Structure formats: C-alpha cells, structure tokens
Length: 234
Image (tube, rainbow, N blue to C red; front, side):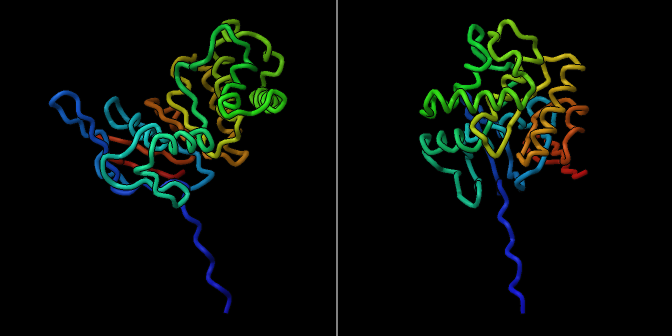
C-alpha cells in the first residue's frame, strides 16, 4: 500500500491567542481566544474598525509583541515565549515590513534605504548593492535608485519601502495600511506590486481598514472586538 501523504504544517498557527494590555489600572483585551491558521503562499487581508485588534494581531504575527495567553507556532515552532533576541532574529529572516508612513531616511538615496536591512545583518558592501539593485528593479524603480527619498513621489517612496521589505528575501510581507497615505491611482499601483510579489510565491498579509483594498486579497479576515467574526476565501 502507498504511504499516506504527509500533511504540511501551516506557516502560522495561533491557538486560543489572547493579548491583554495594562494601562494604569485599566486592562485592555486586544485579542480574545483567537484561532488562526495561515498557509505558506496565501494572500490575506486583515480588516476591521479601529480598536478591533488588527494592529495587535500584526504585531504578534510579525514577532513585535508576544501573547498574554495561548500559543503561536511558526513553522511548527512555538514562538510564544521566546526571548527578544530570538524574536529579533526571526523578524530579520522571515518578515518584510511595509508601513503606512514609509519609515525611510529622507536625505538618503533609495538604494541606500533598501540596503539598510542587509547592513544591519552584516552583509558586505558588494552583496548589499547587488541585492538592493535586484529589489529596486523588482518594484520598477531602477531609474530612480540614486535619488534621495525626499525627491520621490509618495508612490515611489512606498515602492522603495517595499523593495527594502523584500531585499533579504523574507517568506512573509506584512503591510500595515500600505495605501493609506496615497491617492487612489497610486494605491492601485502599489496593490498591483503586492499581487506580483504574491505570484512569485511570497505570503502577503495586508492590514487595512479599507474594504476596497481588502478585496484584492484571496482571503479576507475580519476582526471585531479582538475576535475573528468573518474569514472568507475567494
């Protein structure tokens, strides 16, 4: 008899995940017994109103915060209670972050901004330059790579931020309101960039309050009061 096919472990598995913040004498339940499985290669949007738990969930997934209760398995490894240096190493290897406010150095060239994660990782100058040029080309900005960030348009700045996120070839692109500061035409172009990155095999997770942005994903997870109230695959 043929051997049974081995079941692949999910990329991300959150089980009974809860996060409580203490602010003075107040306790805020940001996530409440949340269960979520994300497979490698998915394109997901996480949507919900302000205070629904979107940012907290993003921070947990991206190893920027830890759970109060429950477990978080990443590639089958329980990372719920790892020390900060271990979490930092996993962030650098596994996650590419794209933020609403770009977080670029304004008086630094596009390519030098893209090189930064590799600089922090200790890569030599030649490798940094090679990988940064490849990432810049991937987002269609090769002709603008020597311009400072403050000489670029909003859409170009966000594409530089995406190039920086993918330069170390992470498995996951985690984007927080990536079109929030852009006009509709530029936002559409940025979403097309994420679709292209997903087609190359990356796992893309967009955190947004905008239903039109959420609809671009293949799976929409809606949060309300720290819980998943809708999980739809298209």
